[in-house]
Image 1 (tube, rainbow, N blue to C red):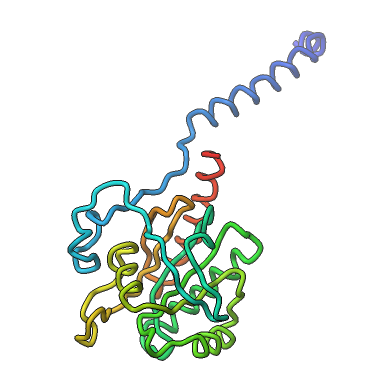
Image 2 (image 1 turned 90 degrees about the vertical axis):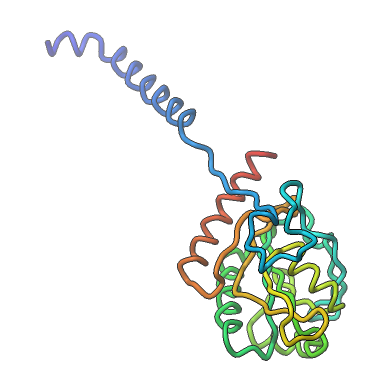
Length: 226
């Protein structure tokens, strides 16, 4: 028996190597491709969506915008072209959920600091209070990297429309004034085609960890698509 094995040693090695390649190929073919849902406004709690968008069931994308960041620079959708990004809504004087949300945005910033494809976008819901100077002070305090994370202010109606018609993450009415918002803890994951891929509780460490995993998944999905 040993002589037989020795005689055909090379053949056995070739068969073993071929078997490894075949098994690997079959595994790759059968392995499910990574996926993430694409959210439409009709899939979201109506409390978070403007009535004009609640029935949208397909082709929803984030609307174009023109806002001002912590450095006084104009930020538009062009700054996020071909980027995966996480969006949220906050205000600088918030003492409830915002500090946790900002801490977790900072965690995302650290995780993807060296990946230029990933960016962050935080909108103030009190633009009449959070001017450029206040956003700059807040950004410096929180260690915001300008090239990675924009804190933006601007026209109140535009921010309202973005929150409730595009990102679908805020309740209306706030303090009762026109275009006031009750912002939520939601983070929205947006793909490079401006589509909502998922929502996360920005105050929950476990959900933020899941967000990080999902960003890596989305990177893989987009690389496969390209």
